[in-house]
Length: 218
Ligand code: DX5
Ligand code: ZN
Image (cartoon, rainbow, N blue to C red; front, side):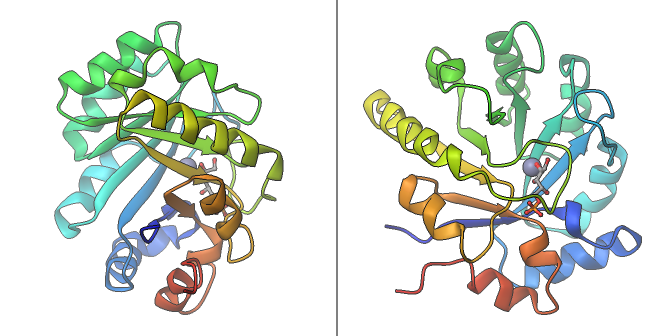
């Protein structure tokens, strides 16, 4: 299998030195930068919005992988696109019309993703695969970093991988939450190709070593 894409989550970075943290993670070999946007409503935490993303954008060449934990989300999509998003992932639960929201992301010229909460079945995306580039399988409940990996989500990743294979579409599966050197191989084995990690990267002194530790040692 190809090397997994590593997407460090800025949530675990030092927010007083955000720009330096982004530069450091880029030097350390990150592939994508995962940006967790929380609204204090869909999840019980608040992070940052388009202004912060826009401020970071000119300083980094990394793919900006936005994870919007916002509901309702539609009114904010254009702002996040303009702020410099490459990927915009919304939750399956983020509004009454997932199909229309995905069409809106596409119309803004961005790659579209859907995040599935631990209790959300893969059926939630079965009829919108044609509009999706990324599926984020939450391996914790969204809202906070540093939580324990939910191994109950591994069969879901596997079922999703087979659903995607049957569709003939090229869709990334991200695993988000509790990813560390012990859980990463399980998620990859199940079919994930993008590893999102906050604490296991930004919580370590050597970012390059932390990234390397997530890749399968073959
Ligand atoms: C949680 C976020 C995750 C979080 C992961 O709601 O979606 O991206 O930053 O943090 P860790 O890797 O520490 O579990
Ligand atoms: Zn996330």
